[in-house]
Length: 254
Image (cartoon, rainbow, N blue to C red):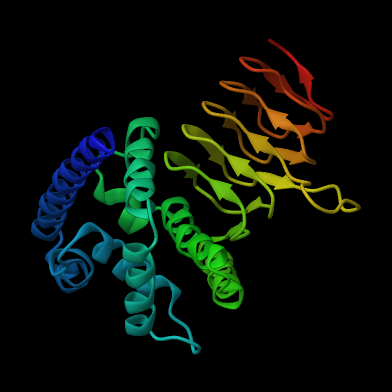
């Protein structure tokens, strides 16, 4: 228990530091673009916490005739605060984006402007709902994220914290997919089934793997630790760790 509390305290301190950095960055954005001051203040500077900020940004994007922005903000914030480890995963995602996307210079950038981060954050709320047997609401958020962000992640998929979905448009992640930490996925990637299977039928992506643009990975197969799937590949069988594959169908190239 002592070790758990120590780790929890470290995460709390890290979250507070990142949240302060986000507010400082956004204040600089306001100074640079005063016309955006009401928008940025509403979504970030007026918020009391990191989770409240992310909830506000998602609500501003996901609102519809079914649920208003204020309803979605309240609902997502409740999910984020009640479900174990969501804040930790959101922070890990944010750090991984900043560390691995050369275009990302600030913590505030993915939260405000990156569909991949926003879609992943929406999935994390939907996943919590799914685990608590609230399947209809989970599917509602999956559908809205697909419509708004172009990212279609089944709420039952298992995705650890520390994942980057870069650019995001056209990404599809199936129901029984599992994705470990430190994984990069680019636009147009499909992690799908083969159409005639039941049960556990989707890919397992191990830590450190990179799946480049427009790749398709089908079936209950493993993409090994620190492996790479080149852009435009079709992968139908296991990829060993520390291996690069390319082509249709994919073959080992290094």
